[in-house]
Image (tube, rainbow, N blue to C red; front, side, top):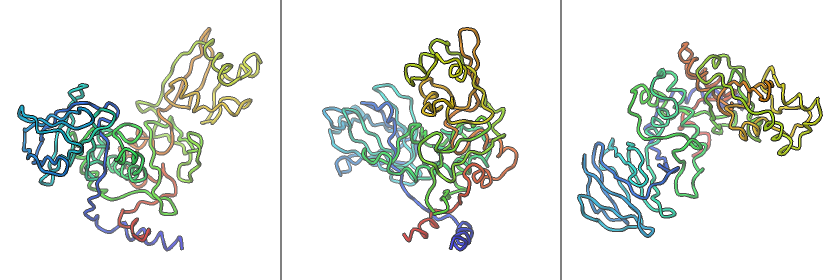
Length: 388
C-alpha cells in the first residue's frame, strides 16, 4: 500500500498547479495593536463596507482614518466622519488591489498589503485582519523571513516551508477570529513582497506545494537561522519526537554569518543560578567542574550527567543565549561561553539551505535533507488522499 501511495504522489506532483485561491486570515500589527490608523489605496480600488452596508468607494491615493472609541470602529475621510461601526471591511473591487496602512497611535511605519482588510476592536484597540490570498501571504513571509538577496532556488525552499507551516498551524489564533499573526511565533509577515521579483517567481514556481510525512499529514515545517553544524532532534527542543525532525550533520551552516557567538557571565552568578534554580551541588568539586568546563563534541540535551533534569534549552532561555550548542570554560572570575548556531536548531537551517542553493543543489533535495522521509505534494493531491 505504501508503495502505491508513493507512486501516486510521484504522478500527482507532476500535475499543473491549480488556481487555488485559499484565503488566510492574518492578524496584523498584532504585537502592538494601534488605537488609530491611516489607510490609503496603494493600487486598484476598494469598497468600505460597514456593518454590512457599502458606505464609500476608495481609489488610488484616497485615505481613510480608522480609530477606536467606546469599543467601536470610527471612520473618517476627507475631514468628514463617516460613522461608528462594529465591523468594517475594506474589500478590493479588482484583483491585484493593495492598500497601505500605518499606525497613528502608537506610531507604526507604513506597510502595504494585498487583498482585503477586516477591522473590529479588541480590548479598546483595533483588531486588524488581512484577508489575503495564500500565495500573496507566502511571498510576504518569504521576504520577511529570508530577505531580498537570496537565490531563486532558495526562495522556492522558503516558500514551501512557509506554505506548509501556515496550513499546519491554521487554527493557531482561531480564538481571536484569524488563523495566524504577523509575529515570529507564527511567521514574520510585513505585507506584500516588493523588493525582489525572484521571491514572487519562487512562490509561483512552487504554487500549492507542501511537505507531508509518510502518513500524508502536513509536517511541522520548523526552521531556524543557523544550526551551528548539527541540527537538533525535535524532542531535544520540545517534548514530542517526530520522525522527520532528526538531528543531521550540517556543514553547510559552518562559517555563515550566524554560525558562531560568545558571551561572558560572572562565575558567581553562574554558580548561584545552578544552585538556586536547579538545586545543583556546586559545592561538590566534580559536579562544579562539569558546569565550569563543558566542551561537548556534538549536540547534547543536558549540561551535566549528574542531573538530567537540567536541560540545555532551559539554560538557553534563562540566559538569553543564541543556541543550546555551546562550550564553557572559566576565565578568572567569569565563565566564557562560546557557542555555535542561532535558534532552536530543529528542522531547516536557513543559512545552511542558502549555501546549498548557492552551490546548485535543487530545492527538493535541500528540503529532503533537513526534513527526512517526507514527500512534496500539491494541495490537490493532499485533498485526494484525504477524500475531500
